[in-house]
Length: 219
Image (cartoon, rainbow, N blue to C red; front, side):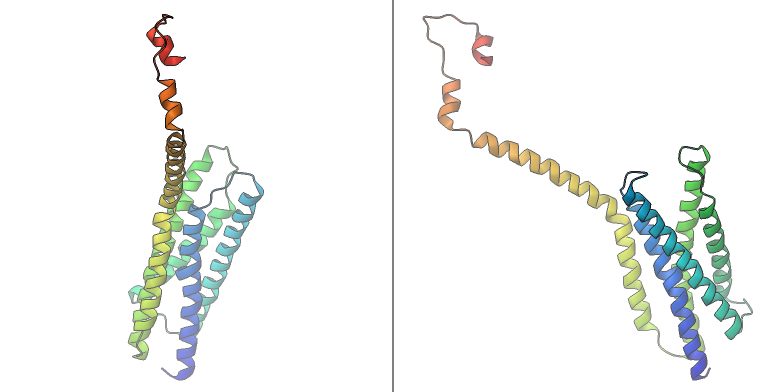
């Protein structure tokens, strides 16, 4: 493989990494973290950002796939090429599903959401796997080391995965902090009451005036 082919191979890999190895997994993780009232301005902005990034992902994947078919030998006899072909088909289907989103409140909306979420998750996972198989195929063809790129990509995937797993836990911990903070403020306010005032409230009533014990306690 000559220098020009290596540059073309790297360019194709970078396009497909940006699409299936970064934007799609990141978009899936980000969409799960959206906490906004339906119909609000923030909700609309986040939705259109999601759509925009997904369309950019499809565009980059299309350009990368076209370059791969034009510049390289594609006999589809290895796992990377087979998975890449299936992945590109799934990306196109996912994009079409997004355009046929039922309106909120309709019965079909819940089924559409489930299908959209499952397919999006599968595409993200398959994209990550195919980046690794692509690095392996690049090393096999060029005999160049891909250790650094593999480590960097693993770090990126780990960060996205941790954000995906812990974003709900962060919200839970924030709520716990509010509850604990409220309890602490209540305890501190009780402790700030002067001891003399507390003892005064508990002093017995003079014997010259008979009073009920419960009245004395809750007076």
